[in-house]
Image 1 (cartoon, rainbow, N blue to C red):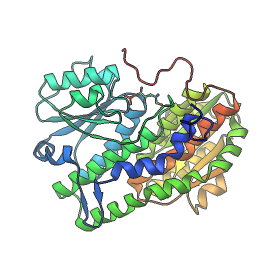
Image 2: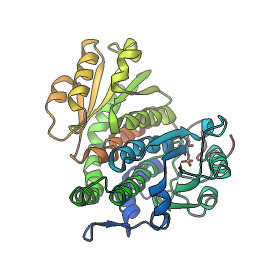
Image 3: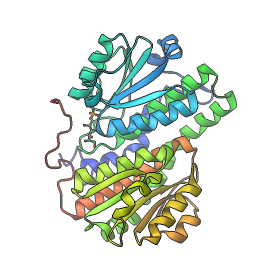
Image 4: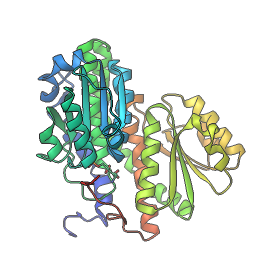
Length: 369
Ligand code: AGP
């Protein structure tokens, strides 16, 4: 097992550090920026269906559901296709309206999650075309779907999903970009710009990983917190949810993710000097609005940890700590902002002496409902 961990103390840390190469593997052979094309057989072969679809319904559980939420923003923003994101466990039991003109995208690292599989079977029985985004090659979901795209993240052993999440987002971004081009919702120069930027993501993830030492310092300060709040807006709202899930899973600290503007509709009541609030406040997208949310937290004496774009000034003035990530296009920021949040949960769990790779009560794949 020590050899499999490749010199890291835990699989989770190894998998966090594998993300630059995992993302590269995800777009290997698919993203051809020189020729300005995206090639994905599962999409190409079914292009007519994708273009005729009234909407896309994404079904998934847990972290994969969070990747689905990011995809909702990307598909609607870039390809102008209406998207609904559903917990597979809710979808399968609520008599959903599904037609032959719907495309269902099922996202699953393991490809074995019982609820996601049941949702796929239901969608197929109603005549929808079902596309799978899985990591495990030959898994049940990969076999049960009509077509699909693998994430090629390599084996993920840690129960807390890390590289599966970022590679799922990568695959879904590629699909959204391909459809945007086919639908003409994006100009060829915008498309090319996105491809070029996407190609820089592995090295930018590498750079984001360099915050590790500082993240450890932050972890040390907040490791004894009883509650934490994670806030983000737009593309980074799902990242806030994912950050909170990671902390809950492996450190057993109660954490909640929220869209930053929803704070004033309830969670703001929780804020006092004991409450660390992790706020994703990248320069791209709703920056000024997030800064004003930060001011609201500060005036209630909450501790603010900002995840900011490199060189940020406004948040730095207000926050107790800032963790920088490189600048990128707004739709790609989740691939970077998620990195320090993964590291933070990891270090807190290690400091609290928890079983990082196999947290209590959790299984890597949930094959029962
Ligand atoms: C993530 O850290 C969790 N362990 C869990 O939420 C997981 O993402 C969920 O069970 C879905 O699994 P899947 O992607 O294999 O379907």
